[in-house]
Image (tube, rainbow, N blue to C red; front, side):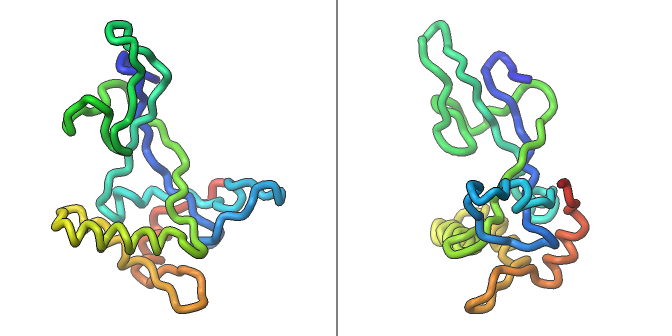
Length: 162
């Protein structure tokens, strides 16, 4: 439930394709829902990669003193707050997170760009992206697949939900 600040904390549950695949997203107007395209739920973000698996969601709440609504400054931090601000109420609510969409320009391309940017900035979080890269492979002209280590880790953390 929301707290007085108007936010709720969610825990990302990654969704992946059937049999631990990473398909490109198809148009749902073709009659296949996103949930059916990505029927497996995986608690991988924190458990496997060592990353953050929580995100805040905001409700349209107006501060009566300033007559402004709370906004995000980044995907992990509120506007006009310090980096140490944390959710202060209730237990996290699970929500589907579609980070592992494959296909041209899919998650593996994005992962490579993020990892390189963190390396170039000498950011300590480069290790999170580097660890994530170790679980995936892609041969030219083939879809993304799991390395043997990736398959072992994902099998332990994923279940079919549909």
